[in-house]
Length: 257
Ligand code: NAD
Image (tube, rainbow, N blue to C red; front, side, top):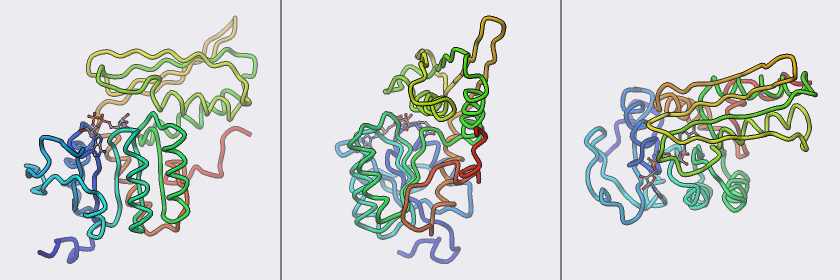
C-alpha cells in the first residue's frame, strides 16, 4: 500500500516510544499537521500494545525500528535513555536523521549519538521548547555578567519522571558553566509532585539582590511541537550533531561574550 505522503510530499516520521506520554503527544500533534505523515510507531519489545492498532493514526505499533526505517524520512526518539543507543545505531545503518529526546543520557548513549552523527544528521536536546532554548542563553549571559553571585537551580516535574535532576536542569547548569567557567558551584534542587510538566528556575543572588530567570511548561504538546519543528529542520541536513540553538538560529550568536 502506498503511503499518502508519497503523493503529498509530507515528511514521513517514525516515533520511538510511541506509547509513552511524549509519543502520544507527538502522534496528536503530527496527526494534525499536513506537512507531516506518521509512518511508523515503535514501542518497547514485549509491550502490551505491540501488534495492536493506534486509534488516532491507524498505524500498527511495531517493535523493530530497523524494519520500518526504509519507509521513514526521520526518526523521533522519546523513550528511555537506555534505548537511545539502539535508535542511533539503527538510524546510522539506514541513513536516516534522528531527533533524540530522551533525557538522563549516560556516556555510552552520548557516544552512540556521536558515532551516528558521523553518518547521519543527529539533533539531541533535553528540552525542545523554544522558550527554554532562549532561557539557556540568558542564563549563560547572567552567569557571565554576575561573576560573584551564587547560582541555584530549582526544577519540579511529575512523579513519573525517571531522571533526577532533569536533563533540562543539567542543560541550565551547563549554561551557567558556559558563561562563568567549568568550576562554578551550582546548587540543583529537584522536586517530584503531581502532574507538573516541567518548571525550572535559575536564581542568581548576592547579599543585596536576587535575579530569577524561570520557565514554566504548560503542557507536553509544547515539547512535541518543538521536536517536530526540529525534525522538519533536520531532514535533508548533512551528517553531524545539531541542537535546538541551530534550529532557532541562535548557534554562533552566544549572548555571553
Ligand atoms: P514515558 O515513560 O511516558 O514513555 C516512554 C515510553 O517509551 C514508554 O511507553 C516505554 O515503554 C517506552 N520504551 C521504553 N524502552 C523502549 C524501547 N527500547 N523502544 C521503544 N519504546 C520504549 O516517558 P515520557 O514522558 O514520554 O518521556 C520519554 C523520554 O523523553 C524521557 O527520557 C523524558 O525525560 C524525555 N522528555 C524529553 C523532553 C524534551 O523536550 N527533550 C520532553 C519531555 C520528556
